[in-house]
Image (cartoon, rainbow, N blue to C red; front, side, top):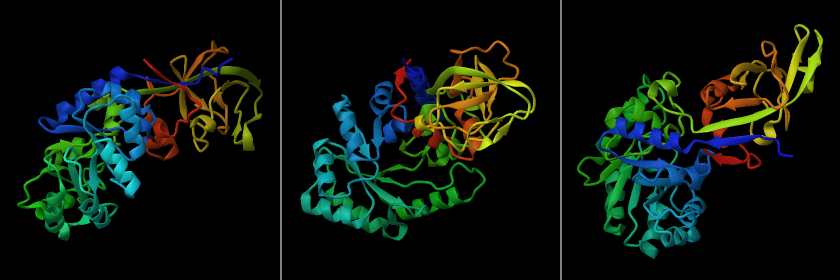
Length: 357
């Protein structure tokens, strides 16, 4: 007998969210980011819903191979570029556009040669200090990259550190630094991630790179997904498998972290940290039982959670429990744990079936 714990993936919502991004970015091309197994939604499933995007982007050659094997024949970008000769050869064979962010990659390109079908993306570090060539080297490395690139030429890119904070001056500082470094270079540009798409229209340029927006989640805590017009793509759900009658002062769960304030019913749902529902979520974290809010009461265990069923007098075994998604934004759950919603959706484990709806 199954546990009826599933992640339902709404493909129409993903298509809808792509259109929201198009509405926000006007004439920019859209690079839809589907790394980390489509942010936990299933990479080939998500790709199928993004047929209208301009290209897809992944982090690793293995993800690129999965998309090609799944039938994706259009443009594909490898965001981290290649780490070694094997990765380079695989990327070449897959006809993947590659990001170059360090001198060793340029050296390998010079030694091995670039496939004429592959565009080259040159990453400039405008201030995040993670990957990319220094601003001061932009003109020199662009000349080197341009001599190696095929007919598709070179696309200049960078990445923002604080675009989810509209009042933080860091993003404008990065934009200005990038513009100075790129002055006079004849190349298309890609700067904006999801947060910059919302908060910094001057960063949209030729290509934007939405990730979390496509999955119906706002990257900016000050703007809810519903306000932006997004629809949640993942609904994580389970069901009640037991209901216990507990007395006042009874303790519930590992560590006895919840003490019943009165005689009450405690529901047990078939999900836990073995499914990716985090152990560190505190008492009081909301869930939906039959579409109505209930709350965690006791520590999350590997396979089960316990719920305060006060106000749910008609709840019974088999009733649906939604952990996040339709009716309960994942951002709200993430806020209870003081984590970003990316961590929750990417953390749903492989034992939870994904079903397309």
